[in-house]
Length: 149
Image 1: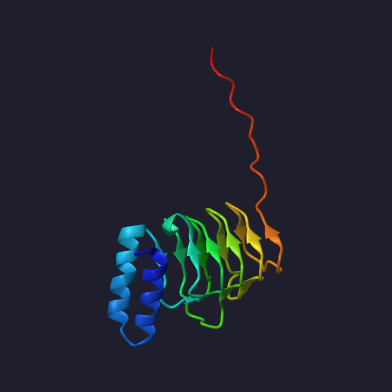
Image 2: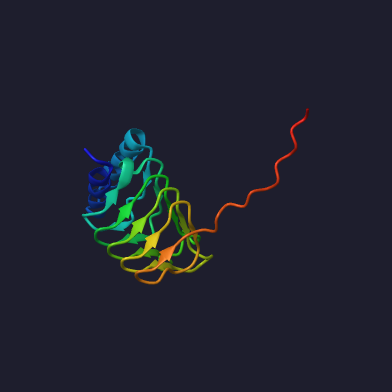
């Protein structure tokens, strides 16, 4: 059993009016794969979670298109959890690298366009156009303390 299959089954169970069974599968996914995959998300059947989605957190108000690859330790969250009109929409063919964080501006939606890439460790707070690549700035090296002699 893969985390993707458990997640998709939990989503189907919730939509079919079985929220307790859906929650049980979500918790099983969490125990087995250390994920938090919301059953309110809209997810294409061919989503791929790299490294079993280890450490991945996905909010209820997220829509994920076809052929999307999400690597481990990714967070997709909406900063208006009680407003269903605010969403993260991930287009078709998107790749999201390890440790990326995608978070909507407060009380707004965010879209990652078809074929876009989000680099490892990137922090995305605004739309990414189709085919674009979003990366975070490189690390800045602070001067090291001189070693005591």
